[in-house]
Image 1 (tube, rainbow, N blue to C red):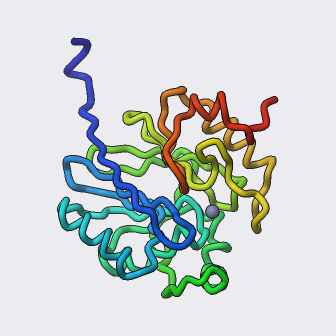
Image 2: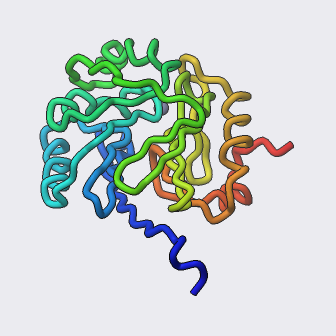
Image 3: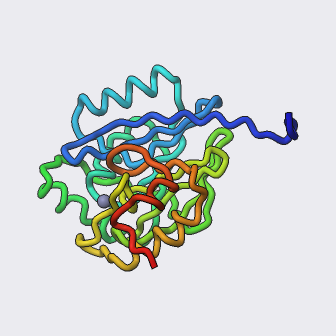
Length: 224
Ligand SMILES: [Zn+2]
């Protein structure tokens, strides 16, 4: 028994949904206080809305924040619904606002029918901390996939939400508007590979992985 009095009870619960034709991972993070954040709501069908509604009701959650890791349509399509339903504060990085403003145009290309996007309540920057319940998410600015891309790191829980920066044995696209391959590699090198091997990566698409596995096996990392 070491330093029990100083040990913080960490009890984050993570729910993952797979939404919309691009199969984005939408995450709801909560803890024993019932405060919660929703990250990248990609719901765009009523049956998808219902999945969120059922989960939030069953757990009696209060959605305090809505956070977008970046402003691509598959990650923001559910913003209007979530804001209308739960009135969370909407948080994102200011550098993504141009892209966020173009959401309508991309929506039609990808076959989404969306409503007007809610304005952000606050911009997130490198080093900011988002708190809910007893949880702390540190904001890491990680450009490369597109302008305004961030990761959310919980040191206590040893997990990081990476949006479309890095995936299991893959990395995010850098060939879309405002994408930049060198920046993407730099963000991964400086913000992800500097974390401990056992940190769990919760990516924007696909299965969870770990920093250690990606450090060893990811074939798309430029190793200098
Ligand atoms: Zn994306």
